[in-house]
Image (cartoon, rainbow, N blue to C red):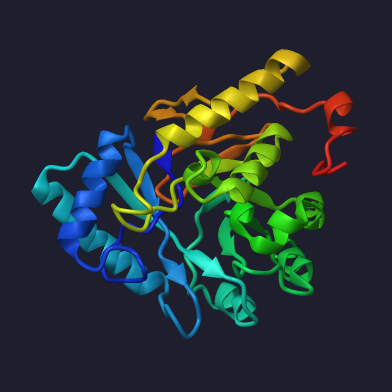
Length: 280
């Protein structure tokens, strides 16, 4: 499995404070069936002032430590970038590492404040899209404003933004509201990626399987009623992909050049006509 959003790099944000803890998290990820990760430390201006340079250096040291410890985990790096007015400048000056490519465009893992959807946020996402950058919105199911009013996501989906749901949310570890919204997003086929967003071993561990089981159940039930198969697992020349829940035909390529290919769309007009999150 591949985890495209996590905080395994040590001493760089609110993830593991030291290398031994980071290595223990890597062991836990491998034990859960994860073979590849793209580490995404926070870039949050004034709080976690990371950039492409220091993230790449930290990732290089972590990879060396993994090899020395004999841990079979392939690691690349990007960032989870907090919504801010400085984001446009950081995109233009190249100090933000992108997660990969989606249909030939760069992908930015974008985090909104947990308690709200900022006024005019869709103007920033449209600016990114106009610059050839596709926002992948991190854990929308855990945003309090979206829990209370999920329809606030619709403008972003209509623009072409992607959604990443946390596996633990689907499994109920972030409470009922987050779980219900995660399940609703999965049921409506608007989730692009499921990831761990792991921060530690105790409360936010690097576990994908329990969330994927819930996703498989939800997508399987919908597939039986709609007649559509879901892209829950796919084999590439390098590895098996089971954490990328893609809802339409596309190609996604993380920065380390692993190629994740998916099949046909899961949604047709008869389904999207009843879908409150539909892009149509």
